[in-house]
Length: 346
Length: 248
Image (cartoon, rainbow over all chains, first blue to last red):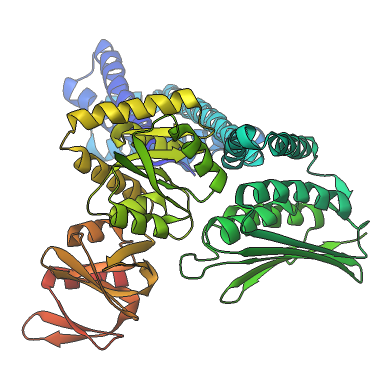
């Protein structure tokens, strides 16, 4: 989860804290002990040992915090752990100095100063731990914000894509071009096509994704689309629509559109010669069954590549609406591609 | 007389161009074509000075068509919507017309062509070639079009067994036969999917699925046996690449 620059910046913070603690302790303790007029050799030895142990304690606690970020109610454990570390560091100090130093008066002073040393250790550890926790929290917050911004951006892009997909710029511009070509020689047809195009666009924009509509309406909308394609490719597009006693069956609005677009894309745009696209619907038990067939050229197309997005979108919608992944099926023979869709009738 | 060829899969889209062209009596339409195949044939037959070319067409698209032609005419693209292609046109093409096409914009493109014709820049062909390369380079190479005499073949890359260097050409060995393409080995090495096609030798690129087995050959060198029973030398660096891709 944490990215590598974050880890390295955490390590950097730990290193800086530890060095600061070591140097700080060294300077302050040396100063204090010299103030009390102790032998300089003893002072340096004592200071080095205690600075090193407290630095180690700080290193341990910051590393712990790095891997384990306590929740609010768990800060208690951090305090106990800090106090323990302070005690351990002090104990090591004391025994090390006892082992290395034989000056009785200095040892007496050492025992006398234990409570003060303990407080100092505890404070240093608390200070380092607080910095670490604050810094981690800040970073998590930043990361969360970044994630949220990323998610929002993604959602916006998806929405935009959908919108663009709905408007189908290719289809729209090509149709307009056809209308312009018709205006001069066949003004009546141009007028017709303009109406068809506006009806189609209106239908596309009005429809709500969640809404269930009768098959008859969905087919009417598809017919508009196919009529326009016929004007563009009239000489070679033939469509057959068969509804077998299921005009009133309900299906999600615009669910067939991507499948027909797909059939047009691979059947018409990518082949030459006559093209027959057939849509047939029938009712089977509690399902509405619609299958769409188009010819395709296996030579120049891989049927599954590129057909992806439209079909995936349909699959996804069906899953969101009915919670099933087996409602859309495609198969192809050498020259015919068929997509079949099942809509449960509730 | 200026000869022009119109290539678009929509009859109405062609009719608007031919209608606009009536105000240019010096330009004569030699042929109108329904798809890339017809287009390529018509260009070879008529050797036009100018073509109007749609991009999205059945069988082979506009760019693939240009790849097949030796003597490039001036090209004016006509297309509906393709942000990506438009960037390429701006850089290289004589001009491009966005559908729906207005007469004013059409006249502007024609003026540009006619002016251009007088100057007749020599790097025009180079420019078009470059454009075709940019356009094909950015879409993963999935099929290759080759011209054998007057026949055009579309070869899906998945049917290729191996590619062999042959002077200025590359031989494409497929299950259905061998084709020649005037491109370099480096071009194919760069454009074909490196996880599927590996350059195993200075003169060979193989499809890894078509390797039946690898046999040691002489000292430190190997030979690959392919599905069509061909035996192909594998160089030392080629063998290293192959091991990397096959994870052995």
